[in-house]
Image 1: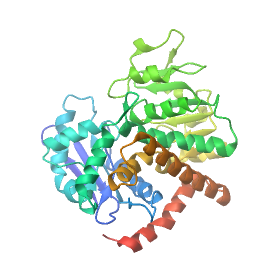
Image 2: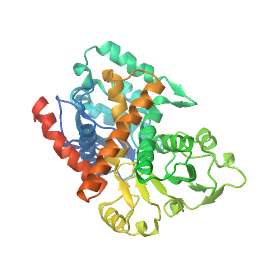
Image 3: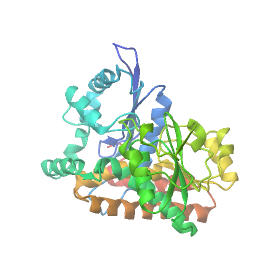
Length: 387
């Protein structure tokens, strides 16, 4: 199901695509960016169906939902953006109340979504899932407690996804026998996902030598001071250049792509790597922290050059899964427990996908799609094809 909404005040458009329902409910974030299209949202919704299926564990309390996505064609920095967001949520209220659970995505923080949802008259942006909970009050308290946890100045909710991305990188390195210490990384985007990924990788001993935001690319050949950059960023992930060290350098915005690194982490916009600019990439791995950052034709060319793309449907799936593991009670509101569960789950998933790709002589993306193809009928037989 796909919907397009036009804001009566500004004329801006918003979209909702529900790709699949499981137990009558779907899951997927809401993004806001200038130029967001229905096709983009549809692709993201399909990706959410896959992310949910990839984390299906018949023994877990969390049973995956269907996939969906929302998108608003508006720059989140626009002075009218918040009003557009509130009106979009009001228009989509029947779907959010019954079929679609949503939260932060590109351009939006969870705090902003929560504030706008309350103004739009919603109980919560995830209220559609409440009827599936054994003890709604306890589950909501558990999630609220988890969102209140601060880990060295950053909320646990902002770190969960980056922990999963980092573990994906580390799993690939370990399988290839590449030492973590000294492995060089370039990160595009320093918001929730990019910033958290950089923190976890730096703490694992890797060197973050390039970080790109809307102002350009910050580089240092011996590694950037990730914690200082995190402390100096604004709500949109833009780093205050006054916090840079004297020997940190600034390069153009696209310099992150051709940096002399082992690992590229696109963690910002979709469609960042195309058939043209992929030629400048020398990294061994591209790890998709953002949704759909590598275009299909670029991925084919990269594979032909021996560069491995770890796909978004696997790599950034821990953000969504952490919400549900916490809400359904597989984990509590404790950062050590959360990070341990994310790491073990993501390592098992990435290992499975990479082993299947190696066995079948295909790409990790094709292997992930194969895992999903195996699991969706199992989920459908258990819960119904149209429920």
